[in-house]
Image (cartoon, rainbow over the protein chains, first blue to last red):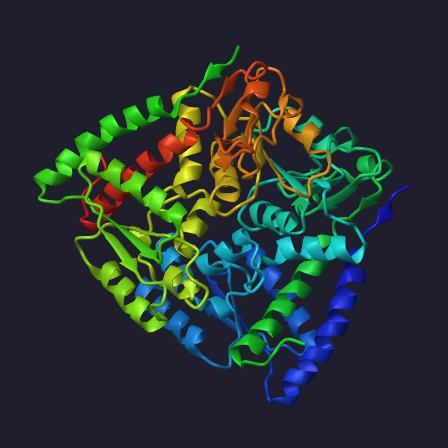
Amino acid sequence: MSIIMKGSEVAAIIQQELLKQIERLNQYGITPTLAIVRVGARPDDLVYELGVKKKMRTLGIKCPVFAFPETIDQADFEKNFSSLNLDSEIHGILLFRPLPKHLNEKTIIDTINPLKDIDCMSPVNIAKVFAGEETGFAPCTAEAVMKVLNHFGIGLEGKRVTVVGRSMVVGRPLSMLLLKKNATVTICHTKTKDIENTCRNAEILIAAVGKANMITDHFVAPDAVVIDVGINVDSNNKLCGDVDYDDVAPKAGFITPVPGGVGTVTSSVLAVHVVRAAKYLNKIEER
Amino acid sequence: MSIIMKGSEVAAIIQQELLKQIERLNQYGITPTLAIVRVGARPDDLVYELGVKKKMRTLGIKCPVFAFPETIDQADFEKNFSSLNLDSEIHGILLFRPLPKHLNEKTIIDTINPLKDIDCMSPVNIAKVFAGEETGFAPCTAEAVMKVLNHFGIGLEGKRVTVVGRSMVVGRPLSMLLLKKNATVTICHTKTKDIENTCRNAEILIAAVGKANMITDHFVAPDAVVIDVGINVDSNNKLCGDVDYDDVAPKAGFITPVPGGVGTVTSSVLAVHVVRAAKYLNKIEER
């Protein structure tokens, strides 16, 4: 039977450390602040926003929402975004994407202050993740996977790790974070031939595809570590991951549940980034 | 017996196409121009410089060298670099790195006009390669490998490709270019355990480590495609690659020689980038 890697355990430890750091910032008169920027009101965004706000408030991080109507034009949006970008009391900016089609997302991405770019939109942070430099911000979900692996003592050096999915929010950046830790990384995707075999070859298998219950026990080597980044809804309208949990759990050595796995850690990583941004921007040294 | 993938064949075809494009630029009164920027005079740099200059002149690309003394200070270097960056008659800038330690390389890298950054130093181009966007410039050597594969009709979709080496000039960007073509990419390096097996699993094996003759026939599956990016000097002071050619050639399906393989194509790719930069900067459409 496998060990269940609960996200709440990881999040609890991160938060403990965070609270100390936030207290220290408060002593400098600084309240770490995350601005959520949203255009329109997609149901998914609203759910995520609610979760983020709750988490930030619990920790003592301010979290104002700047919601703009879907009809806002480029000039107006840029002006508003720029004022958040310049506001010294805002340390992190979380922009919900994609923006409506009539807005030019690239202009925004290119102008965000990389020090406030806590979810890795700007080329500066993307290039840093690619190069293995740790001074920037990696995408929160990719980093959450690293926190889970680290918390459960899963060594990476020299290990065969297969990442299924090549998105810019998980698959690609996560592959680079794993490479930085000296894992031997294989990136799979929809065009991979014999994907079962490639996955079964992995000591650590990470699914980030967004396809409900796609990874069955045929994909998994005995005692492998299985990390499920997917958040999907199955045919019974129930939340599920990319991994068929009931099928895989008996075979895996370690496994993350969905819900309650990586997703639970992501917003803690977001908080870590906001606090780090508040330190950078106020030139307070890391401790 | 394997098919030898000669770089000269690939370069010849690239050059044929390039000459047409350069002629077209000339009709607009534009001579594509590459500025080589060098601080000090390392022997390796001088050899490379000579090769680049010769190639550019053959094609009708101007190639002035801006050589600065090793003692130049940051302010002076930045001023000079900035004037090249702004000069509308210079389309590409090739900076020899690393710079001497007293100079801040990062400032230069962050200021280069991405449109002139023909060998992928700037975060903008690095991020584009990572994201699979084709509007920037990939590192020339990584792209040269893609040209060789394409010229010899080696399909990539769904193929198992193993890249040995994770540098920012070859291993990492090349992995992303391969991923963009739907290959299943595995990145190996010095910390990979059982590297022989991982390499032998590949249908296409690419060595970019800089270790003379490291890849022997044990690393290669029968009929695999073997691309050698290494340029080393062996114990007899003879130029050689990362692949032990005599050992591997009988087993491989296709193989690049060293010298005369990928290296031969790299300067042609550099020329392609200069010509493309000249078009971008003068707002002439690609044909």
